[in-house]
Image (cartoon, rainbow, N blue to C red; front, side, top):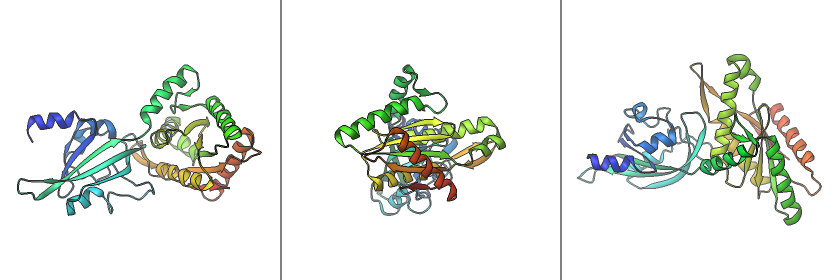
Length: 297
């Protein structure tokens, strides 16, 4: 690869990496570093399926071992595109749009693959929202999520929309499983790290018109607009799966995180207090079922 070509690739806003036929990474551009958190020196020479990006689809299926789009493109030369969730070096899941292309030599023989990926998360929008919330003192500094006061304001807003225009919405009540064990076993800093990781996963994978906020302690509430009970269950279970797929490093140990979720849609006779209480009770049913699950009504 000549210098001019490398300069162009390194200045693209999309992440780009090249592999050989065995999916060993041979090039990793600057945007790939920014989007994933992994510097080139840590990934070049390794294979893309070696516990780096750990791509999963929206159903939580691992793509790196069995259904990898890049592996299929290397095998048949067909260009592919899909939305997947990669594992950021910090531990959270981030939504990306992935394009895979065959890498060919001068004889038109496939010698590897190219993956181009772009961040399609709502992180940029949320960063702007965060600045606004900071000014209004509606911001939780640990998780970078709206705090309880702001969630109450948002709840009033969606209730007004529902009462005036019959626009439906649902509530997801999330509680981090075994949170006390993290603090007792590894210290309170580990609990903070768990909270930040879960919050980052929710922020980066949420729809632009939905909002998550820290309700208190290890509890997080999501306000999900324009859904019925079936859609709320599907969306909530996707968030549960994405959290389950996260991994964090604590004291040189790789630790998994799960959440229990209660999900409920607004009813004609609901108040803010009644819908939150119902979602909370449903969350406790998820705890009683063994955790890492979603219960809806």
